[in-house]
Length: 308
Image (cartoon, rainbow, N blue to C red; front, side, top):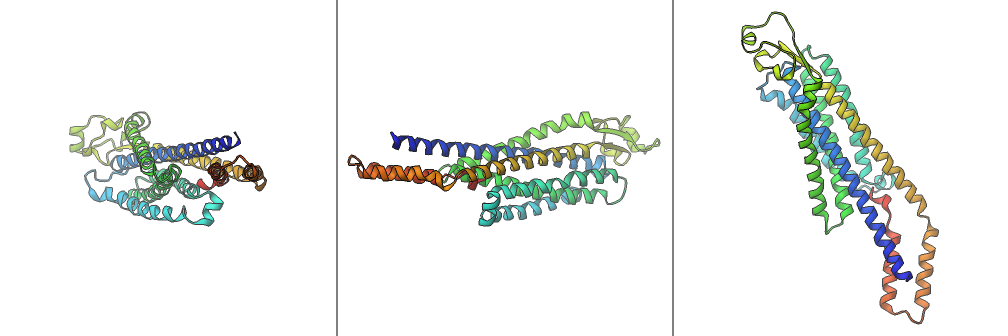
């Protein structure tokens, strides 16, 4: 009876830890995908409507995409290194360090976005917004998405690592798709447009009779019909996501710390005593003894704090 009870405890404990880690990784990647898409679409939509940049200019979009891609690539590499460094893994619980750094970096985005829109009428405001925000979003996604993926794969084990990877990617890109749908509603409610001058060019006057909402805006009125509110949408999304991510990391770290403290050496005494007593029993055979020893080892090795 003692043998089966110890094995059941080991199995239940391992399952609980796996579910907790997969759930945590899923929440982190959903937050990452959702805020990335909202911020990216808000910023790119505002390039012409707020900053008066040419709508068909490839260079305008490259100003955002190049720093985003470069910073994301470097952050992916950094994430792979950080989660395997033993000192960080013991102190922060492995992937939690990447998540904490990634969400902390995202806190810079609201300031960059709001300052850029406030200075939208000045030359250089769009390049600053694109470069600064693109870099921050790249670092954030590179660290948090990679950490979420690695956490899920480690929790699932080698046999189910592929399934865990697919689940995380599906959850993240589903959040991206949902944000793409939501941005239209947010634009309608929170973005306001107006003509900058009473006198308009002949081209603009010919195609636009009003400029009150994003749906009224046309490329022919670039610089004459301007819209404001995109920065507020992106700033709110990034601030809320960063705060939620950091709270989640803090909660996980606290729970991990408590679990580690609770797992003191004296907790292993009953298992050792059971092994010795079972081995001394005249009715014990070698197969059952090996099974009990394996179960004891599984319980001793089950340390959720190391997985975080």
